[in-house]
Image (cartoon, rainbow, N blue to C red; front, side):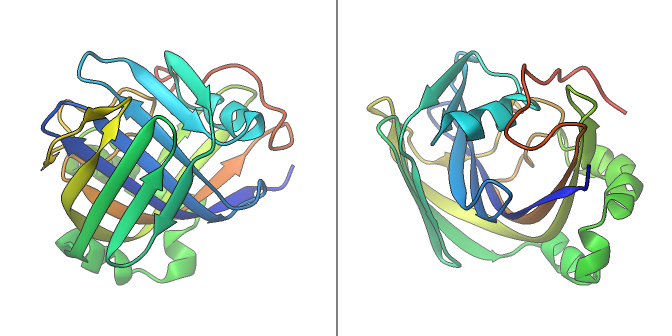
Length: 216
């Protein structure tokens, strides 16, 4: 079937409490606009917060979680900051200036940067430069995903809580999150990205969980 494109931004942050969070703010997708959050606690428990069963099933086809929570989640993203609000997670992020890698990404023509061919080409570099980050990978049902980053900004401050417990201050994403084949850079940041999904089944009908050990 034709490739599916997801346009949006991903915020990846660590905290002094040991909780690491990866938030998606997706503006244009086959599932409509939505926000989601992947949380790994200090003890290593991986939790997905998704707004609907359809979104949860789509994400679970690529990533692995110990718990999935279906609850209303509002993600408001802007150039100066992000606000994330759900019954489980409250998060305020302060977004700073463009990072050096962001300036390099901006120099690549947008159509090229978002293409699967480019994601395949830069994947070996991403593995070396950004620990835990992949720009391509495979999941179930013959599905392949390609991540085309087009910009990168630093996250300079964080306030919030998870399950009512304060997160503390912003910190590196360390240890790396263990959700699947592509994590987030160690430095807290917001990445502008186009995700291309090629699958044998229509979006929203995928079943099962992605296997982080299946890589190409």
